[in-house]
Length: 179
Image 1 (tube, rainbow, N blue to C red):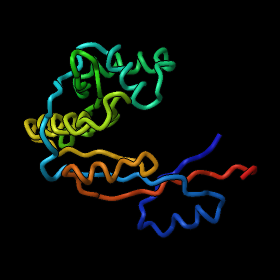
Image 2 (tube, rainbow, N blue to C red; image 1 turned 180 degrees about the vertical axis):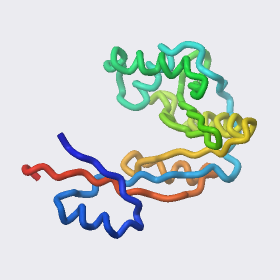
Image 3 (tube, helix red, strand yellow; image 1 turned 90 degrees about the vertical axis):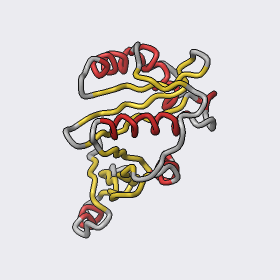
Image 4 (cartoon, helix red, strand yellow; image 1 turned 90 degrees about the horizontal axis):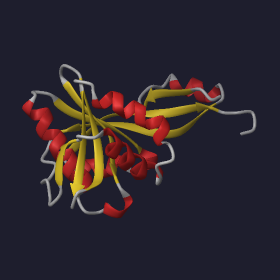
């Protein structure tokens, strides 16, 4: 079992972890929505009315299949009932084309799980989801933030849609003896 730590890029003491057998495996960037994200496009974006469809689109977006529905479904069902979470879905001609989970704290709305089903990619689905999340955050007096992993190509996508980098953290993982 590996141990993982997050360390701010500027944290010089994290170098001691590297010397103790940790290795950098990714970078997590935290971004703040500052500018105009874009328009809603031709798709409909609304709060999910059914956790099963949201789960299926999430799994297809991130894993390419719905094999983990038995594990992920109950988690999404629980989130679907939470007052502090809104599960957004973008639909195209009745099909769920993309998803976003919006978690709230008193001052912040955090966008997570921004994903587009493969057959709907490059059509503005994620941009429309982010625009709706920004509308919700603004209407509630919250700031919109999100986290993106470099390995998923996320930071550049969000920087091009009105987000600014707040900070980044190196993801460090304990090296196994086989490394």
